[in-house]
Length: 145
Image (tube, rainbow, N blue to C red; front, side):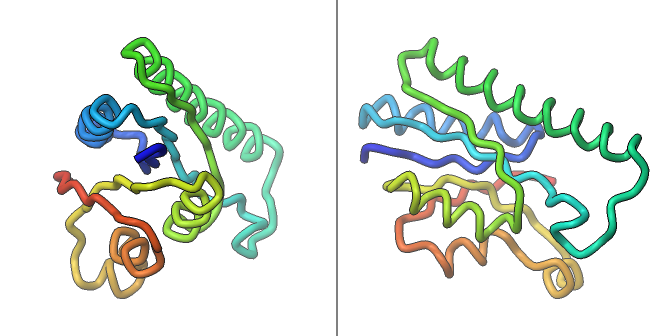
């Protein structure tokens, strides 16, 4: 297992995913790629961009999300694990699978959140979608909401 992709949200549950990823990476001497999928730009999903202050706010958000990934990658590096972070924009499940293919990852680690039936109907379920689309093993870690 040369490369492990860990899909993270910017929340406390990410620590649980990192813990599993760190253990596996240490055991198999794997490289870790931390991936966070940011909400797409409004233009991407068909909306016109608003005033400049909205664009500035969005840029600040993306910068903070990128710093979060860089900090986590540096933490893993200090533990002797080769790590990098990637901040991507797009539809979450599609981007996770595409990035795993691009990196030739051997494993995807992601969290499973419990959502209501209506949420899954209208928004979808990232975990289920990744499981259907991925050609490599996916380790799903239950995390609380």
